[in-house]
Image 1: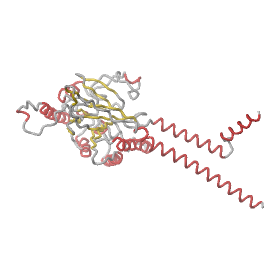
Image 2: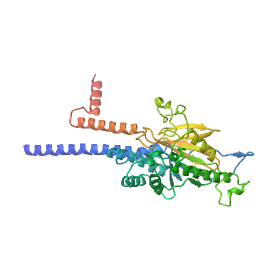
Image 3: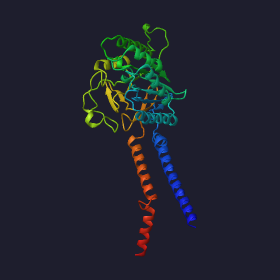
Image 4: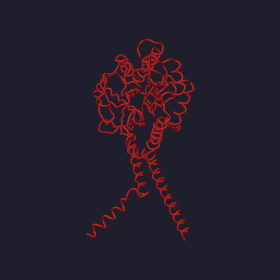
Length: 395
């Protein structure tokens, strides 16, 4: 009889142990599913494409122009073999991959622009390390064929001016194309290698400026189609639309003092003066770009924080915050609805890293309490409540 009781006792113990294990597995699975997959859909689902204003002419609506849906993100900083810890790589790169793939699926953009600093160690990585980083990039930012992906070089991709070399620029352009002028649906995008706008007359800088002058010439000819000059030639004209300027370095500004918003630079950093050619383009290079290209909108990265400023005759510039948790707790990207004459921008926030960490900590605490209750080290809250209720009834 004692043997039978002992056998039943062991069976009950194994059942309770298995039941506890099932509870732990269920909680862990649910938390992982939420934090690593579902949270991206729940957050990005709230983002909507902005509506472009429709111009009115003589009280009647003009013929609707085709709208291009474009995503702009910046400063992904894929970690390299030198400074990248494997756990940091796993965590932050998974976050960017899930955010990007979810945004593609939910928002269906037609073109995606990444405004520089794709890699963290492109400025010094070896050939093998570069190949490994590029392979990881293509896996993370894979996209359907009908979605175009355009990339601008940043200082971490090819180095600052004093580190930049023809070799680094060439290997970057072999992967991401050296296209500087991109036109789609009547909209012109000019993608500038802003690292090369040092203005010191170096070979790379001179070539970059000469290329921009050629683009300026093409854009001017497209604007003057009605009064086409003989110096425009008989080549194919670009759409007669003021371009959108895309680059890594922001145009010259003194600091982020006039920037605001929850994803702007921290208040204690906003007043720190920018160094020309390091934190932003020089005043001279910025004036040249505005004069040569006459853009209607400028988008840039580099600062990892958001900012909106006006240049010259009211040309807006939007600094796009970093896309990575490594640089921000609250990363985001810009959604743009573009036509040849108008544009509208909206910001789409990604899940906050704090939210995910707090969820994991809460789940870990819940599991600890669950085990304490299971082993009788802590009274079950339901049992405690029932006893309290019975005590209250008998009073």
